[in-house]
Each structure stands twice: as C-alpha cells, then as structure tokens.
Length: 190
Image 1 (cartoon, rainbow, N blue to C red):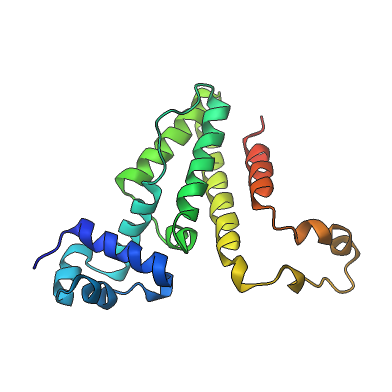
Image 2 (image 1 turned 180 degrees about the vertical axis):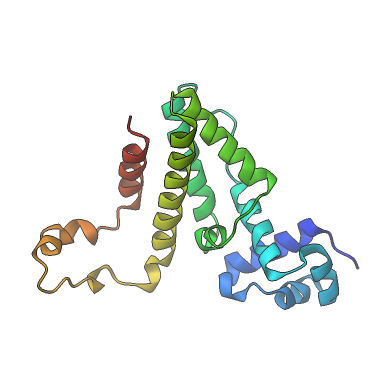
C-alpha cells in the first residue's frame, strides 16, 4: 500500500522517539510502514531530505497562537515554545540542528520571532542576528539537555585552571530551565 509523505515523516518521528536519531533510516521506515523502500524514497528522496521534513515537523510543534502582545514577551515565549518542541522528541534538537529546513513551519516560527524583534525596534541586521543567536543557543542547550543521561555532571574536572574551579558548581548545574531563561534574557536584552 502506498503511503503519503506525512506517513513517512510520522513513522520517522516514531522511530526517533523510540530508538533515537541513529535508528532513523529509510530502510527502517520502510519496515515500519511495511512498504518497499522505493515508496519511502519516493516521498523523502534522501536521508537529508527526510531530516529536513522531520525537523519541520518538530518545529511545527511550536504554537504561534495566544502569544503575548508586547514584542519582548512574545519573542521570549516563542523561544520557550521552540525549546519545548525540541524537547518533545528524543534527539529533537540534534535533528533540527543538523538541517537547514526551508519549510513552512520553520519559516512561520522564524517570521513570528523576527517580526517581534523588528516590532521592538531592532534593525533588520540585529533582528536577523538575534534570531540566529537565540536559535543556536536553544539548539545547543537542548542538545546538552537531551544528552544528559549519557554523561555525568561530575565528569567536569578543570585541573589546574583557577577560573574554572571558581565557577565549577555553576558549570555542573543541571538547572536547564534557569539556564534557558538566563540565556534568552541576555540575548533579548536591549
């Protein structure tokens, strides 16, 4: 039975959530959908294209309804929703970070975020660069958060580095919510 592109993406996200990014292959999706691999390739074309479609589906989890009216609060809330969408899927941040998805949901989120920044009086350049900075920060923090079970916070040993010794308790903290709010506030400060 022929499946749709939405079926292929849905199956890929199910594999992602169950087994992680490394398990998502065109062959594994074909097995899951009980179709020939040609059917999956027809809808996804390549692993890179599949990753773009998956990334956009993950970002589609960012609701743009009910946002605050004030530009700063709106931008911060979009960043929060972006983070939640990434964390909603195992390895979600790694999938999104590994793509350049020029797709509807991704563009809609970027439009809303940049629109808030422009409304706040940022120049076009500053709005674009602030958007990138916030996206990179959120992606990086989420990747660290999602990788946490694979590492121990006690793994950090600065050795003979006095500055790092002073701040070590804060570097080893796993308070991702606080770190997120701190970073977004710094990036959106005017």
